[in-house]
Image (cartoon, rainbow, N blue to C red; front, side, top):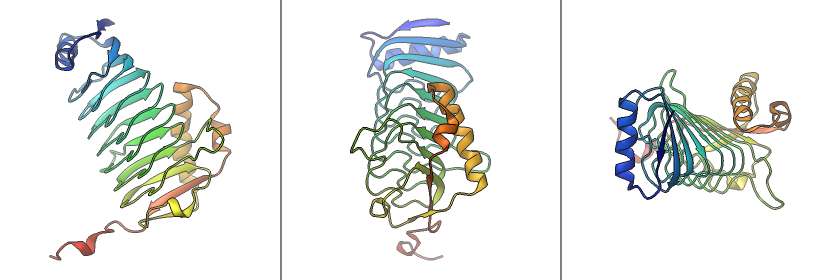
Length: 246
């Protein structure tokens, strides 16, 4: 393992150091004293592992293709922007637009996320991105979602806290959301509907919840014993009437 101290290092210099270290053959990097530096892991391909102590800045893992990033803390906005592949594990919370246009890989967030999480997620053939959140999500959860899997577990909510904000699934036209418990109808975008769970859904949930518990602890069976709401889009072209016909 190669240790890099990020204290006081400008984000561009830090990222050049990370990239060169990986090019030199390092299989694992430990970053300490990270304090808002942006673009960590962005545009990097490979199977290496980066562990981050601190709070990485915006666009961590943007366009990333294969790395494993472990964050011992919170993460800021737009992590995994258009990420192609890889795994991100956050031992804390993540900000707005987590998983923006994400097209592959997996994100596990122990606690909460901000607004517009999963916006424009997409999938193609065997590339099915997934985001698993242990706590709550903000407004516009799954906005314009075109594919992939969003799972919201709502663990350890305080009295009066709600698992998801308003406008959930607005513009959704692909993929699936699993939200633990009931979601009030008024919170749903007009493009989504709640449907009954099938056996395949429980298999998908079991796979990702088991991984979540492996990273953060907990009992998968206990989590899965609670009813989940399954949200899917009404159609694949909710705004088709706004475009000219061919």
